[in-house]
Structure formats: C-alpha cells, structure tokens
Image (cartoon, rainbow, N blue to C red; front, side, top):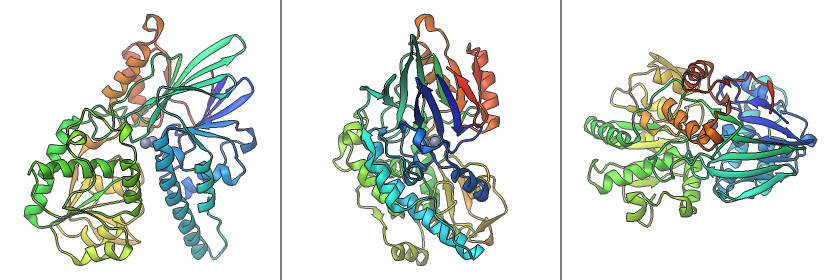
Length: 463
Ligand SMILES: [Zn+2]
Ligand SMILES: [Zn+2]
C-alpha cells in the first residue's frame, strides 16, 4: 500500500494524491494548478498517471484546485466513478463548465499570440461528462471505492458539500486507516456546518494552507465588514470585493443580508457580478439539508440570498454599465485571486481612485495580482496596462474558509483522539507553501506528533 503525492505537494494548488492498495489505484482529487501561467499550464497538461490505471476517484470538494482537471482525465479516456457529496456534484457542474469556458478562451488567446493552434485543456463536453461520472454519497455513510478501500465522508466545514475523507485500506492481512483532510474549514462560518474530524487514523494527509498563521475570530469578521462598508459609503466610493464565486460570495451575501436586516449598514446597492457566483448561489439554495441549522439567519428567513439591496448581474453589459455608475455600492465579483474574471474591469476602472476600497477576503497565492494588491504594490498590471494602486486595501482574515494553525491542529488532535491510547498518526502535510509547512512541522512536532513531513512533488510513501 502506498500514496504518491502528485499535486498540492509543497504548494497550495493542484490537489492530487494517488493511493495504491492491493493492485487497485484510487485518485484523491485531481485539481488545477494555478499561479505562474506558463509553469501551471505545463503542469496541468501532464497527466498524473495513465488514465487506464485509475480504478476510481474520490473528490473532496468542488473548488477548482481540487476538481479542475477531472474533465482532462475524462478527455483522456477516464470512464470510472468519481465519488463525492451531492452538493459537490451540483457545484462541480457549474464550476467545471466555467473552467472549460476559461480553458477554451485561454487556448484562443495562446493561438492568437503564437499564431499557432493551441488546444484547450478540455472542452465543455468533457466537463459535462465528468459530472455525469460523479456518484453522490451522503456524509457519514461508508461505501466501497474499490475492493480493499472503504470510504466515509465527514463534513470538512470548508464550503458547501466539502468532505474530509476517511479510507480504510486493506491489503492481505494488513489494514491501515488513512484520512485525507481535504480543505479544513472553521467553526462558526456562515451557512455551513462546523468541521467534523474523522475519528482515528494511522496516516493523515493534512492541508496546511495557514500552517504559519493565526486568523482573527470568525465572529469579528461580520463586524469588520460592517465597518468597511460604512466607511466606504461615507466616502462615496465603490467597495470592490474580489471573491471566490463559490463559497465566499454566498457567505458575504449572507452576512450583508444579516447586517441589512439588523440595520448595521447603510442601504447601499450590492451587486453580485459573476455569472458563476449566481449559478453557485442557486446550487446553495438547493441544499438546505446541509445548512447549519443552529444559525440565526438560517432560522429567520426563507430565502438566504434574496433581499431588496442585492442585485445579481448576469449579463456582461449590465456588468460594464456599473462602470458608469457612481458609488457608494458594493461589487462582489470573481475571481478571488484577481487573476481573471469581471473583477479585472472593475479594478482597471477604479483601482486608481482613492475613494475605492478593495476588500480582500480570501487567500492570495504567490505570483497572483491579488497578492500584489495585498502587499500594496504601488503599481499593478491589469489587462497589460500599468495602473497606480491608490485605492484603500482592506483585508478581512476572518472570512478565511481554511482553519489557521491552531484550528488545523485542533482538527488533527480530534482525529488522533479517536486512536487507541491517543496514539499520534503519521502526518503528511499537503496543500501549503513551504514557509507555512516548515513552521507547521515544528509546531506539530512540539505538540507530540513525532512523524510529520511535507512531501515533495511525486514523493511516494509506503503505508
Ligand atoms: Zn477549497
Ligand atoms: Zn484547496
């Protein structure tokens, strides 16, 4: 029995791990690499292994850095099952279609620039086929992935439908319990339930996005959001919120809904300016069965995502028309790391205006425009033009959908507590940048986990 770390090894994106048990091969996630364009393209175009060797795939959640290359496997002939939760399947249907569209646009761009034919990584049809191959399972139900591998999903509390994956692997007389954390969320996030760590593990693949950081508490985020909106409304400027279309956007709309009902923010227009976010919001509304029923707003209103101030702008002309309108207003637009999408034209039009507020609510990876903005670069490059960054930049860490180093360790401790004598599992850190992982290794060693490492890409470990 072994695991190969084929993606999200010493980096955050491209989540993909290959589990080999008793002659069968199971893929855990197959996400897109993001970051430097040429480098990611090359990684994305390389299959993690020949598709005919894959017997089954288990998908932790719908974010593109976990699901984005599934259609690429399908394009290369993968016809087996992809196990995930129902909400993950429904979110994937909108996200993979969007991703296919981006791949097609990218290929057109490359073809124009290089004056040669460039094939997209995959097309819309491959995305649709991948969704057709998704088999949905409920949380806390054990099922056979392949002979010798039994799987149970628990709620990862990260985005709607997100799962941590507990795998019971049997080869001959040996049984090993492997837990793949997926992306671990936080207690108290809006809409979704708190993370439910699996009980017990011999080996844990643990995400480590924020292995060297502390987040402000979730409870403070809504309060801070209100402050930013009030200040921006007083200045009369636009509040640009680059947000992941899936998850963060719905949480923001939820909190703005609550703040509006409570009279905590002025009544300024709120635009959700992303067709993907609008589609994802529809999927959220379809899955009340997994909402956190202990939350006030979930109890109070029938429709979480509809209220007078909020408008959904699907049409591109409606989006562009926002450039002619003056603030104050809130514009929530994709993409989260400001690498693509409608947020770019809002930045191009407003980043040089000191009345503008850019409100950053999510992780910004290295080599992205978002990272440059968070670092207050004096000039930013948008659509190939250099523009001065005069807008006010506000960062709300409380909205992180990833646990910080204490929350990650608490999650791991809960897994360990399910072991006999609370024996610490072997821990392999994935889904984190080297600085974060190296600091987290030290923290975990000090906390009584003697066997912790952060495998390099394509390293293999025997279970
Ligand atoms: Zn995620
Ligand atoms: Zn992720």
